Length: 116
Length: 114
Image (cartoon, rainbow over all chains, first blue to last red; front, side, top):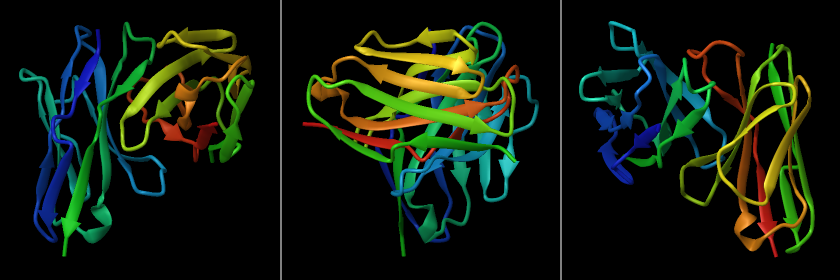
């Protein structure tokens, strides 16, 4: 069965520094996608970055990059040059493409606090 | 462009009352549709998802049900609400047939059961 694990309930980072948010997953489907979302205190869900299981390179989107280690089944989010506005909940999600019927499950989330 | 509408934004219901939350998507055809519930400060629990009209997959056995009467309409229902049904309900859609496309979420419904 699919499973997503985020082991860091909360993280602190100094403004302008980089931070890594951990995510590990478990699936037997060779085709899957990994997503990261940001949820500010307002409650909206904002898509940040995507990594496909067959992608050879790590995904990057502006200050966000995904450290994808397929053999270890990890997909950590790296935020560079943290800003105060990055303070939010961050969720890792996985979708199985072939057998999952587009079912998408989420991890428990990590709350990030950026300090001035 | 595509938009997703979810209503109501907040709802206060007594225990044992029925529930109907509606979600509609505009600007796309045959989307994948999802209902999630989020407890305060917690992750998203997948409740239902649908890849087409009348096709509903249930993830969590409970007193909730979902229906997709039209291609871009997804409804979450209950005949009798429980206290444990309180939470933040989010509807989402993604491009049908494409596993590499992100989900787009509605603004959510905060449901309080008294």
